[in-house]
Image (cartoon, rainbow, N blue to C red; front, top):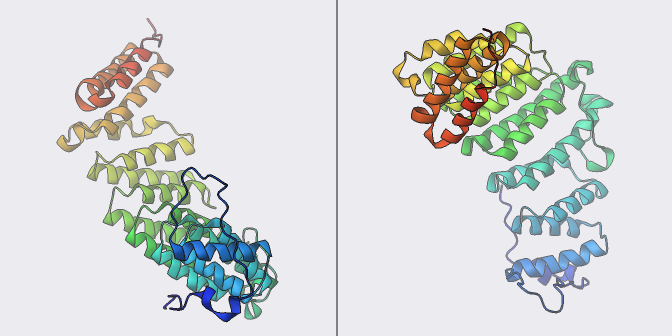
Length: 356
């Protein structure tokens, strides 16, 4: 779809003749005035006039579009546009179409992602009380919705919710294909998953994440998303699920032992379920014999944590000795850039009292 502006500037059209533009007031002696482009400066002069008058019209809505396409992160204009959409009872599906185009052009603009969330949030309010065959899509009839209780909806409403969720997840996935670390896209994805309740998309998300990690095992954003789904999703983190995730991370660690993400993930999962890090002690000790793993700082720092905890609990000289060996190896051979930290860790071990 082509969203390019008319070749004739809007302010030269007769329908804008009655508006007196308001110039930006930088004070009598601005120290470092911003050198705006003429087009943007004139456009904002007209926007100030429209917003001061609180005008709610089609031309005001079109003006917000012009400003946003010139400056996609102008949050004041985005908010004014949302007010106009509701006042003018606009079709929100068309707004989503325009937002999709804007998102593809400016994928790092937080305001675009937030605006899309606001629009989808408004649309989803109708799922709470209206049969899906009569779902309104205009702004004036809708309000902001709480989390959608997917399990309590009728079959037809559930089908409608699934369609909305799939459209949004596909849109986000397309953006992540261009930039797999887009923070705003991931944040919006988490909102979509959560907002529509406990639906089938949670399990599907694990498959999506697995595909991403197959392509790039070091995609820390995908690892973070996996923890969000498993550790913060609607389903309980049972013993079986925990063990499945531990084995999943271990398999990834065996492939890339110098990749920090699965190490952080496995520690996070165990901590979330209050299971000791010592559960992976045998696994870690087994990695030492592998040449590609022996010099992994994440392997040896994990062993240091395990041995230190063991020393505090069992108070044995052997555990303290093993922990010191790991700290020395990290400080002198493996992670010398942080040698001061590892030496500090080693000194902390001296305070552990051991049994005679």
